[in-house]
Length: 274
Image (cartoon, rainbow, N blue to C red; front, side, top):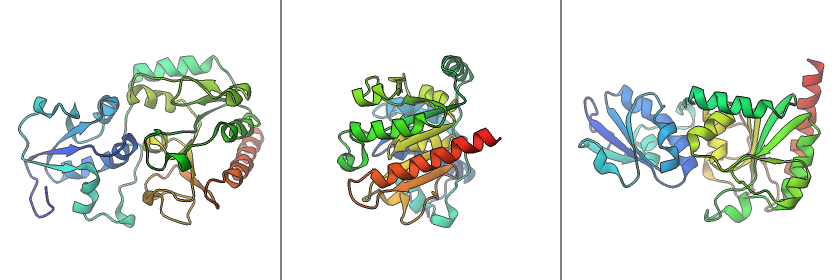
């Protein structure tokens, strides 16, 4: 599909590309296509299929490689090309959240499970992404850095959980971090994230998921971070509930950990004052 082609009454296939987080971020444009009169279909990674089917304006979702299960399309577009065709810029990004919905039964499941841990605040921590990502050596944390973060979180009267991995580094486990993964898919993960008061994560799909669900999320960025986070700002043009923490030297998380620890102390103090 090209922007000069009308969409009224046409079936358009928006096909996933790149990572899971990219698709969570760019599925926000589906309602705009629907508003132009299109019937919107998605082809996505299997773990995202159920969750992205909840986006307004999406008629049907299939798993990548299973497009033959869909009706005949009139046109298609890679997901990350949609904002170009819609002539979106920083000021016109559709940033209203939440734009994902969760299953009530899964919400009840995770509310019951997390309630057993008590504490006044629940924080989820994601410290690593896919090891095949071309910037993973810089965006993911070493176990020692994760343990430092976990100790900072522990001061804030919280129960805190490791997101995404069933096995935690030993240093993090000793600090009290509880494992929650693996989970069935992103529909279940989204129901879990909705029960958290805060997500602290490196630049992974967890950041996009929490932002798309309108949950408070602190994203820890390497110096050579991705283009979408822009430069020299602590907020995000994509997600209004997101706060960005940036390295000042490549590979050095110490300054980020100090800033996160200060903000967690402020968060804990504000809760006690209330």
